[in-house]
Amino acid sequence: MVAGAPRSPVAEPAARRPAATPASPMVALVAGGRLPLAFIALGGAALLVAGLWLALEPTLAIVPHVHPHTIGLVHLWLPVGLLGLCVGTVYQMLPVIVGVSLRGERWAWAHLGLHGLAAGALPYGLATSRFAWAGLGGTAFALGAGSFAVVVWRTFLGGRRRDAIAWCFPLAATWLTLTTLAGTVMVVNRFAGWPGLSALAWLRAHAHLGLAGFFLSLLQGATFQLVPMFVLGTVRSPRRVGWGLALGQAGLVGLVVGLLGAQPWIAGGAAVVLAGGVACTAVELVAVWRSRRKRKGEPSLRGFLLGAWLLGGAAVLGVALATMRGAALFWPLASAYGSGIIVGALSLMILGMLGKIVPFLVWMRAYGGSVGRRTVPAAGTLVSVTWMHVWCWAHGTGAVVLTAAAVLGAEGVARVGAWLLLGGLAAHAVAMGAAARHLWQRREDPL
Amino acid sequence: MITTNEETEALIWRALGTVLDPEFGVGIVDLGLIYAVRLEDGVASIAMTLTSQTCPAGVVLMEGARAAVEGLPGVREVCVALVWEPAWTPERLTAEAREQLGWNE
Image (tube, rainbow over all chains, first blue to last red; front, side):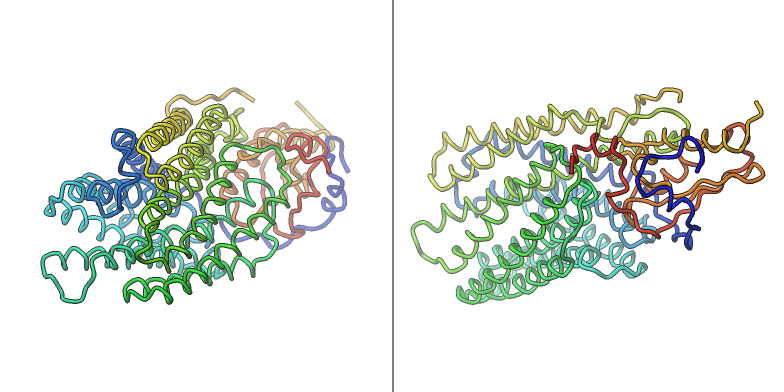
């Protein structure tokens, strides 16, 4: 061995071993990172506006979820905000995971335009009952979701990977399309007035198709690509990951059937199956976390884990709600369920993971070409740990307070929770903005 | 500057050590990603791996390794080969890398 050799205990024998067959080519940054970051910026802005809306109108967290303003706010938060964040991530992650370039990048750019149009029109139209605007926004959203599904399926089929982590993407995209279809049925029914079609049943089915179909499916797969990578851990049981996803899919099918058919015991049984899937996912997440070699905790991942815990709680509450009809507690618990899942579980998990993804995307675009030529900062240093701590604390606390407010029906408590939540969202936006600044103000030094 | 093969290979290892993994801020040598370095007639052959087969920074790290070594005295050409065997494990981390990551086992 020569002087200057590494100090790794296995380096010397490995250095004498001939190299094996070179690996297949890897996928680089999609569209130079511009496409994913554009979706993330749009989704993040929508989320910030939604947080401000809730802070100004905190009663939306405690009134029945069929209130028009609540529906408008939920559509700004979920399909515009959180979905935008996820879509941007998917467009970058999926090609890397399946090992082929994104199929149909132009369709993805068209999706961005359609999503932008939907962002303004859909929540406004729903909140104000101006159905022409809702129709415009909904149509734009549906076309965007359709193009997303086409791009995702084409890219997935172009690769060879077929484990649960890869499958979660086309499954989530398909559920998103069905969610949009259900929304379209509801809108048409408003004018057609089909007999026997319960608007409330379709609303609940539509909500779960989106929440569990798109978001949960995506999290049940993508989590086991991202978390092990970020903490230098390992997936202990790929089979458990698969079971988690499979039970979630089966449970969701039964849940939608039960909700549409107003069959509480079918819905309840299916909710148990779905909760079982969430449990499998949770057990494996704990196993991955325990296997981690990177022991130094980060607020991004702490926020993600807090969200995961809230998701487990929401799944249990969902089982109860599925069989609860006419009970006095139903509406407050339903509001708590919605708050807990939307502003709590999903938002924490997605924003937590973005705390790692955004700096990485920015780093790749700003510094990737300088690696080996100049001294560049590590991706993790692009985002402020302090601001992310503020986010984790304020968002987590705000979500819990809002959920409690929904159960109590207390406007004052909801106001406190909403402003805490807004503070958390603002802190997260500041952290992401500081990271993004590196796109224009690079920090490089000679080697 | 005229260098011996041994001196040049030492320079190569040192240069590779300046290439940092973006996620962990640890050099790819301390991460144990560099399996072999060979210098023959001015051609530097580097065998390296990644922490996972779906590492999104793989292309950047490989190009970074090439860029770090190009232009070193005694190096006329650089070939970087990506290999998956033996598979990378966290046990390949050096003591310095483990301390940086907080892994004290």
